Length: 419
Image (cartoon, rainbow, N blue to C red; front, side, top):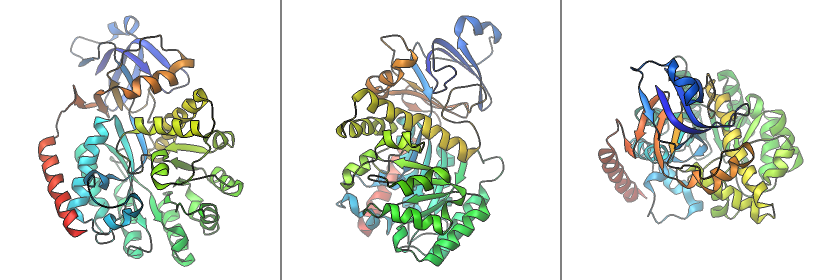
């Protein structure tokens, strides 16, 4: 396939942008890109061509922490900080249809990879199978983890994580992956956390930890370090200022910090100082954390949040973009084992065509401003994952959206009755 007449923002430092470009895909991967005039003669007339008519093409966006069940919850009378009330009544049907409807929303907003935490105490074993089935149908990449917590059967949750991780080997490894999910860490016994650490170490997977936002995050980070949870690295949601000892653990153990600016605002917590975190050489990523499917909205919220901390607007935009694009790309590449989140030869062909035609030249120094003020506000025109067009001209190619929405509405109705 050829993507023709494109302006590219690559998120690749060697060639950050190209205007008037051709991008060539073979199988699942990008094999070449450059100026149309220099490359067009290399490809024969039978090659499939997607002409994007000067629109901006960027790598598929990556969500470092989603709560897909929230696709069923708009209108439910449950306060934001009481999510566990909803999680307690999730079962197979609601997990599957919420994930599938949520992934439609993700694709429509340009997200091609989701790190998804699952918590459903009434339906533990089989929960990740249900969610993974939705990812397979939508053909979105997913890194899934069941949250081990005092609220679920911990032994069953550990088995579910281990079973899912065993299923991720082989040909599907670059499309579906897993981590060991942990929540409510301060309420878990040391013995259980040590068992989780052993299981994660045996599997080779990192941890995906949802830290509490009660001011005790630093103590929890150090407790998890003492018990060996971070030995394979992983991903941690974190709110508020970060203590130096927590920074040291995250830096040395190669743990990515998933920052959810919108979630922090809704929860009434503090926010990370992204500049300090970056200067401390911490690995930063952005997560929607249940606040809708759009990473673009999360970028803008993160920048505004840094601005309210007194950061210069230009710096705030760059910090948010760096976390969302460089940080999320590094995280996904580490977990999936394939180059994701960048346009470069050999990277997976996950691409988003945005209905944005740059009014001024694309230059390395102004790319964050192009994204923040223009491209990330533009509608998504087309989405390609693994070299296949999944969404084009604002229509899904192979998914019956009307059927999925109807089944999701029915699952939402039943969910409300169980609350």
